[in-house]
Length: 296
Image (cartoon, rainbow, N blue to C red; front, side):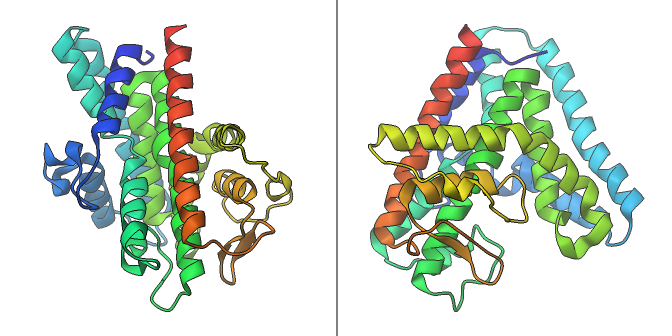
């Protein structure tokens, strides 16, 4: 089973409408309480069941959390038909599986009011920004927006095109579980989620770099491709969009003591704005590409 171009078009329209007045007041999220969002429910349920050191247990839980909802969505997608309201309902379920606006709008709004919105950016990163310099806060904002472009936009739509709602939600759930246990301090017990997320995002991550670089050319920029080569970031997927943005903007994106990508200076407020515009255009280009591919 594959995705529907009509459903994808409606879901992307919902993404365009998802303009919050405040950083957490989204159009789509107002239709259900944020605490009842499927991603939030899956995260809460999984966090109570997974255990450090229990590799087999966690592997079985990852399989259960990914396969059970995917099977249910497959049956639902097969049963609901293709009428107008069915298309809208499916599009809403797809929209819940992806969003780049949840990063772009909060950061854009925050940097419009404050040159160093440490508190807002902290919402989206695991590193402690309490004592981070303003350029490092800006770097964190750009990095998380670039990584989210893959995890929360390119990849779920990629899998929707191939496998319909089950594909989009399998990726979304795997990424959610990776964000829960897929870290080095979990050791082998976090590996099932980490490896599955890496596999599902492998192609989308590399595709995202191409889209970002194409968007940079359309904006009249001359991307430096060197950050894409020899990048030693631990994440095999995040390195691609982060390196592409760093090369496009000629800035250095840095997590102190862990990695530094790019050969320019650390980003400032204007760099953040340029990065968010670049990623917004990248979302538009990828959306048009996905729709065109499906209609063809």
